[in-house]
Image (tube, rainbow, N blue to C red; front, side):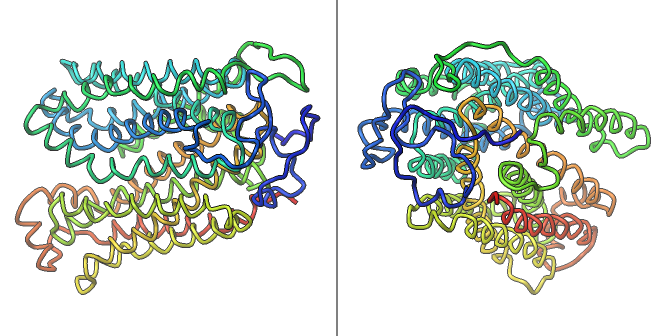
Length: 521
């Protein structure tokens, strides 16, 4: 997917933010300050004095950030309630499918939302997505069997994929370019409180009211932010975008991309199944998944993504490299602390809690106007911090290294992620033409989600092959926890953890090189 040539937007030229230097010789999408909104009215932020909480943007900002807050709370809380739900529904053997079901349908939802938003505006995709997300929560929360619970998670994933891409398109259409870093920072800040409070609140609700209330209690809370944001979205971002100053025109969906979306969802699901069952027979679904996944990914991501072509392809690739390496490593941190150093699950979880704050801090730093000309360097710094944090984490496998080393390292790593993730979102919107904002936002999210599952599968396979399964099994006994706390190694396999963290650190370090490719010549 190539960047469009500059076009006559029919409005007077406006000064560009300092950040525009990153995209030298690249035409900026006509989403910048001063361009008309979907209704043809000039952007109220054109004068340059508004912020995301100014009168012109306050209702919209509060509404969409609250939606992100609720989704973040659900995402952090569901992991606490899921084991109890699986046990009560007699579905522990199907536990992994409750996660993979969400992921596979969310990939399809992302592509569908990109098509929908580009052709008919983001409003329909956003409202449908929130409705599906709420319906999935209710279905899971009232499920009587594990398969019904998994079906609810799949419906929820479809809604989540629709919502995240539609929100990106809303930001691209409703906010001038100089305000987009700030609203992206607000999205990141929306995850801070849920990342700290979510697991504790979900644990209390699960213990005193039951796990079902973790799922059925959230849908009612979505009504308030929707009532605030929808009128503003309808006024600022509804409807299709016209081409070359022509009136907006509703066009049909690209059926080829829809088929590719089905391919990427089914392929990812088959690969996850194969990674969870390390037998020779699993090679068959794994090969089938790869056969579906590879052509679908090539068709849905910008041309040149895998070779880090300059500009938009490298932005999309960087998002996947950063998210995949970090999430794959983070998934094994609590297990390492519990099995190797004898921490309780609660203390192990708290070792990562500060990361939510530093992540938001990194997002806030990248939103500062005075640092905008140095965005590329900030992203390089961010990836170096991520690589250093991931490489430092397994040092606690050495008994003499204090356990709090992980908490400190992960705080710096999350700060780096805040710099990188928010910046990739800002750059993507700048490098996307209005009619491509949905498709490109979907590509960014696909890169993020797909790299998560692929690197998690690779890390999980390496972990299991070096005896990680024994770690997980023996760690359930108090004897093993006490032995680990005393520095003993009975039943432990430190090499299994090192086989996860060190390769992910190398992937993150490669991401530092990709940051040098986000600027087009």
